[in-house]
Length: 211
Image (cartoon, rainbow, N blue to C red; front, top):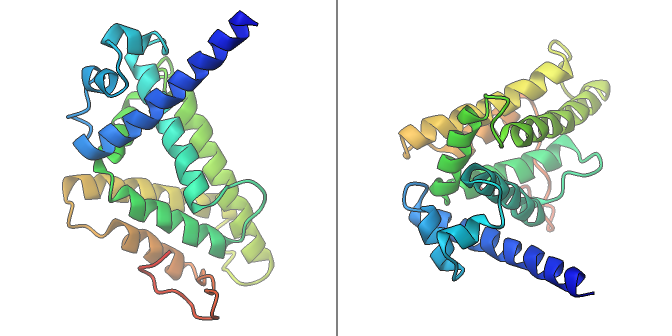
């Protein structure tokens, strides 16, 4: 019983660390969020903080997983088979939110490059995340094509990769030039593909600037 209680406390502390880390990185940015600062935010030493993770890279990977969990709750779960219209709404909402937390975008982009090395702790995270996202897009695009609402000139899997590539590429452009309207560009791609917007509660379609 004591061991189970200690395990539960460890899990709770790990969650506290991740939630605090999201706030610190969003506030201070990637460069301002050192392991020391993250540790201080939860009342631990650097060694105490890393006790809950195998390495600094594993800590940062866990932070990104936590971010995905929070975004999923805020903008909609990806389970099941949502329509491409619903995906447009939620996906653009996430991109718009990312523009408000540049530190997390910096962290994501930096680790994405480093995770090209199969031995990097974040490698599996990025492979799994990208695969899940593409599968979601592919199913939704295929449904639209089968219903005759979208061109079949390009297969669904390729279109799914293009949507993901535009999103990732816009993040890099935005990091280099914060004046770039990242969500508007991603939303424009969906519009070019002929994806309609979801209808609001009063039967009024939201504009491209709202989620």
